[in-house]
Image 1 (cartoon, rainbow, N blue to C red):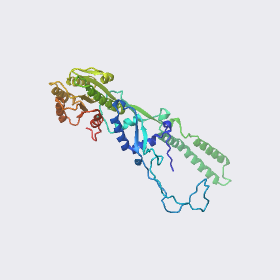
Image 2 (image 1 turned 90 degrees about the vertical axis):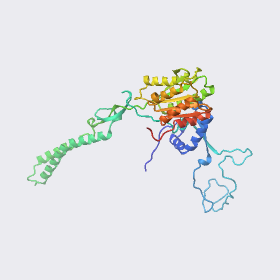
Image 3 (image 1 turned 180 degrees about the vertical axis):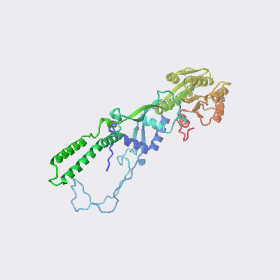
Image 4 (image 1 turned 60 degrees about the horizontal axis):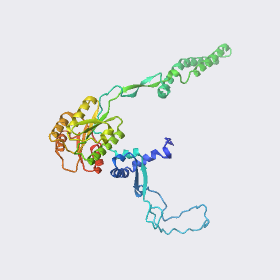
Length: 427
């Protein structure tokens, strides 16, 4: 029988393997609890873990137990009341067998749930389960610096950690055969000559020849035994070479309206949406760059801190932001080397004659370069001209342009999941 022992260290005497098995088994319950937790807490509070409760009835395990009938022999250590042969009265069956703690009480309280705590990493794993950057593509080489070490044959020189045991033993076996073959042939000839000499009559036998042949056989056997099992000449090592890899790098442009029509509540919801997006990208993609663009009548590329917390305000010209995004792409992010994404948050307000300019910018310049464009409009009111112009963009780029409406903070997470849910097929 083969035994597999997992000796991976776990912090605080916990079993990581069993925990992962448990999380996978009760994934449906945990995911529902995580979604409820997301709706309760603020987005800025997303980085801590969460205490999850699962109904005890859902984690019960089937067990084998003795039925009410039949005859059984029971040994009770420390028994002072009965001796062998005594009959024990069958329990009357009174009392419940519920899973609560403590039985009957005047407190009216009990425990009927199994509770445990998810770590930050586990919590974010469930929050972003099933999400991805849509239409992520393999791009041509960005530079020769992005390489992957791959095996490139064998060599006689290398470090012990890269030794090829199979090939080294094969070389050693071939060498032993090659070195021993002529010696074995000579040994066989000497043994046959000795047998022929010993078969002769004592009168015809040459004692000196017998001694000579025995000495030769002994010498040849020592030569065969002296061939080493493995030699440094036999060793072979895996050779590694740097192979350039296609780039799957992506850049996400975060565009937010900070005009005077955006109330503080609108800005707070937009910030929460982008914070959720930031956590999502940080969790799943190491090579995703973020570009933050704020706009009112003019657009500026800003830092992450300024994007979320600056109090700058003004009028509204959305096309200024789209023009700036297009310029940044041309200057820093060539289409052939980067996967390009844009996420825009606005309340839908725009300068009267600017919405059609935004539509033309998207259709003629931006969308042909982008993998995906997500637009969220934060307003409880009817849609304005910007939304209606964007609808014509959806008609032309339905697979890569999506827009949703957010009314209140509780809509952020469902809308986010809808915008970035995993597609079964990627173009």
